[in-house]
Length: 396
Length: 57
Ligand SMILES: Cc1cc2nc3c(=O)[nH]c(=O)nc-3n(C[C@H](O)[C@H](O)[C@H](O)COP(=O)(O)OP(=O)(O)OC[C@H]3O[C@@H](n4cnc5c(N)ncnc54)[C@H](O)[C@@H]3O)c2cc1C
Image (cartoon, rainbow over all chains, first blue to last red; front, side):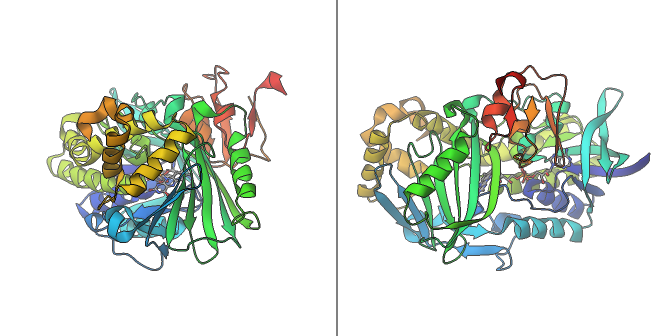
């Protein structure tokens, strides 16, 4: 069996894994990143919407090669069809780009490579190597061949599947009400507003929402997520999406260029993201905004923090839980409160009726909120429907 | 569990949703292991309805 030795082995070359590999390699770590697929960023599992505010933090300059469309704003559509249009001046930080994930993810991986990380494609981690009760690397299959990668630390960046953390005994199990199951079509020959991301609320997508994220003049990602606890019959997700498209004259003549399915966690983050010789990053740690389902920004920022802390650990030679804890503290400081608040909000909103949602969208569109984000919208809702936000009032 | 390989999109939705860690996606091959309790969660979570229980055909 072929064996490899390195300081850090990163499992998964998504945004979280690649940014972690980059920062760890820049900090002097000898890094191997493995990816089980044959192409980074493909097949697509994403609506491809990102905000702009955080790109600076990971030192990523917007590049037309991976930007598909630059947004001017967002439109929130109530179940009854009321359209609340938010432009950039109102939604500044939340507005962003629709990207090409297959190019975006490759760019992040290329940055890791430039920093010195080695990348092994078509290589799956299948279990952990344990030595004296401690994690000492991963076992895997690379191009059909059994391999071992011995490392001082393993980074679990394996996305929604989140197997590596579970092998280590970290609980990443989800409740049915904390899972959004999704289907998306890349549609063309449709009528859209090419610089506005659209979010359609209500019973068209029970517990979740339907999105139209533009990718050009007449092309967009049209998808939806439904909360698992609302699914009645297998295949419901596809039925809901097909029904909505048939009912919307802007879309009904469109054709599908690509089909994509997947699931997102809409739960609070896991309780621990470090243990001796192991770090959990991004979707694998269930770090997703439960209101929007957005996770790219969190995965990237966690990747950076993880890479920086790993670099420090390299200099002391200490990859213990205590040493890695700095990473856990840092990402929680940055966004745990917001994630938790948005999860509480999702818990409340997933079951409200179309009628109440109509009232809420009307209320927020009339409220003249200056800087719109989930937080300010919740504040408006607090005035009109205090009972909806009562349980997490102190977070608003 | 029965997987309809003609429907499966290899998206991993069932893998991350399985409460017993009984499913593993080997690139594009879905494997069920002995921890499966036939709870049926994967049947519902599959966005395209590719998984069925043996006896509910
Ligand atoms: C339908 C859908 C729509 C979404 N839309 C958006 C959106 O519009 N905006 C947004 O911000 N977020 C969105 N998300 C969430 C976003 O895709 C994730 O948050 C983001 O990709 C997380 O990055 P990550 O690096 O943690 O994991 P991933 O990007 O999932 O990367 C994990 C990688 O690990 C690999 N891997 C898994 N297991 C192994 C193994 N055993 N061995 C080797 N490699 C392995 C996988 O192949 C994958 O490449 C969406 C998700 C879904 C499902």
